[in-house]
Amino acid sequence: METGSGYSMSEAIAAIEMRDISLIRDNKQVLSNVTLEVHTKDKWVILGANGSGKTSLLKIAGLHLHPSSGTISVLGHELGKTDIRKMRHLVGFSSAALIDILRPSLLAKDVVMTAKFGALEPWWNSYDEEDEDIALSHLERLGVMNFANRTFGSLSSGEKQRVLIARSLMSNPKLLLLDEPAAGLDFPGREDLIQSLNLLANDPIAPAIIMVTHHVEEIPEGFTHVLLLKNGAHFASGKISELLTSENLSACFDMSLQLNNSSGRWYAQLSIG
Image (cartoon, rainbow, N blue to C red; front, top):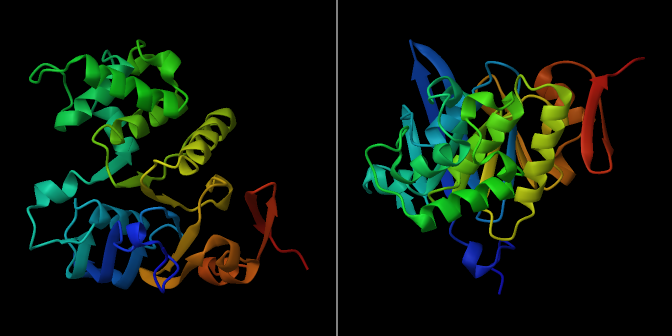
């Protein structure tokens, strides 16, 4: 059964709803009245130039940064009216910043398992066979099951990113946040990651996803919606198939761009002539 908005009753409660989000840091306006509503089956990408506020908005969505004003609800639980620990348990956050924090000698499967308790080491908590099975299943979903017993430090940058995404799924979140997961990867690593994200996006049991990037080439085929940010403000948002156009991208990045789609993948280049 569908609601008037086109979503089924099971999707009627948004995975996350952010209303009029503003952020001021060091007397600088980072975000201005940004609104975003993501439903449980949605797969969003946030696009914008460097400094447009993408990562700040993602950190606010992950409840790691408090907005200067605005409201945030995760599955109907409003920030300020619900225990933030309960809200954070509903959100998985994957960032490359964790690579430099995790002990290189940890096994990949332990990197994933420790997320059950929000820990970085397995020493202080007990894990059972079921925990290991769950961790292995997430590694398999991301195409890195073969590296389960490899040390984290021995993996390539792309393999580490996929292990971190598997880690962010360990708590069975209802919303998965990805902060520029393909940044700094070589071509094979990027393509392997994008293929894994495409499979995840099309997995019927996958959570809602929001991914930050400033490269349209990094948008997996299975993603459904896009938010364009410009100078910290909402520029445009909607279905990728309708909103991601040469005109909108050019206006968002303040340069003449030609956008093309081939076999479900996007490519942009400077418009000539």
